[in-house]
Amino acid sequence: MPPLPPHAAHGGAAEAGARPAQRRPGARPASRQPGPPPDEAVRRLPNPRLTGLGGGLFSGTAMLVLGCLDALLFGSSTAFYGVLFLPVCLLTAVWVRRNDLVSAPVVVPIAFAVGLLPIADDGGGGLLGRLMGLVTALATQALWLYGGTLVAGVIVTVRKIALRRRQALRYRNDPFR
Image (tube, rainbow, N blue to C red; front, side, top):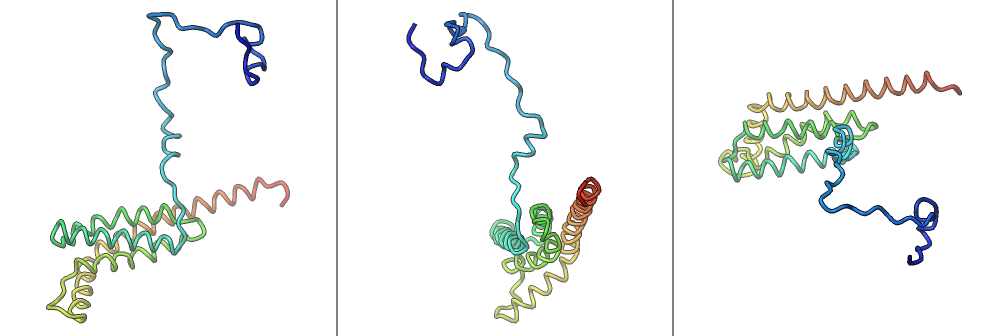
């Protein structure tokens, strides 16, 4: 029997001089676990924590890109743009840091307005025409704007309540207070 490497000399069958188990021909391999429990799979999902500024940049950039794609692919469909606004609001509210929770419902309406720039009617050209088209789009799409802001506000409120409860429980269980 050849000598063992230094890391294999610490206990087990290798010290007793036994040979490692060999697989018999025709034997079935040991069954594998089907995968991690759903709990662990959820933990592996991306979990970025955005500051208030980061949440604004994320939602503003996402809505600007979605507005450009909407203008290119769907002919400036404001209904399609409104539907795409809701998941951006959800992600912004979920990904913002605990200390910056209040910023999420503030930055998503700004992101909505930024994303409307490529799809708003230019009103005959010029800066004033573009501004008039933007104001008109904001007025006609107010339901999407309020709905997305409400989604962000509800998620942030639920997160804040859960955070306060955890803090209160931690404070109650602290023996050194």
